[in-house]
Each structure stands twice: as C-alpha cells, then as structure tokens.
Length: 170
Image (cartoon, rainbow, N blue to C red; front, top):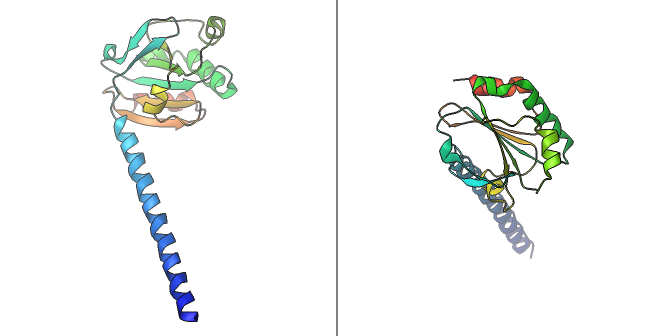
C-alpha cells in the first residue's frame, strides 16, 4: 500500500513539474513572438481623434515614440505633459499618442494645446493597436530608432531624458 502511494505521489510530482516547465516555455515563446511582431515599426492605419485616417506608411524614418494613454490617468497626463513641454519634436522625433477611449475634443485641447506634423493622436476604439503592441497597462511608451527598429518599451511613467537617450542612441 505504501509503495502504491509513493508511486502516485512521484507521478503527481513529476506531472506538476513537467506542466510547470511547459507553461514557462510557452510563455517565453509567446513573449518572443510578441516582441518579434513589433521589432520593426508595424504597418497599421487608424482614425485620429479628428476623424481622419492615419497610416504608418507616411512614416519612413524615425525616431518615433508611441505613448498609449487614457485622459483619466494622472500618470499618463504627467507623461504627456512632460513630453509636450520638452520640445522633443525639435529633435525630429515623431510622436504617436494612442488611446482606446473616445475622448472629448476639449480634453484633447487641454492635453495637446499645440498640434503639429510631429504629433498624431490616434483613437484605438477597436483595440487592434492595443493587441498589436500587447498593451497591458498605461502609460506604455514604445521607442523606435531612426531605422524604425524597436529600441525600448517602457511600462509606466518615464523621464523625458530617458526617452531622448533612447531616441538619440545609435
């Protein structure tokens, strides 16, 4: 009887360890596939908050920063405010701000008082971009270099100096 219990215990232990290892390997593979999918600036199109269609085909060189945000998020507001005050566009850096929530125009005017060619505010109402970039929390900032290759991905607020460092790092 004791040997039967030992055999069952060993079998259960081996099964649990094997299952655990398989899950870890699957998650690692899944993460690598997600990173590969956005390792080069992906082609997509979406509506801007003005109702016009934005397409990444118009962007042929970087650097580009993408910030996923929500108007109700204080961290997002702080990050957007810091990026806007930094004059980052003088370095030739394109900015894409993406939200999956329909926002009112007056909220946008508060967040983005000066709209220019280096700034695009995109509405991801279908969630396709959120899935494409695997966004789990906001703010998330993604930086592409001058060759439009993924340089760095940040989750949470970051300093503007860090963004500039990764944008100017060759």
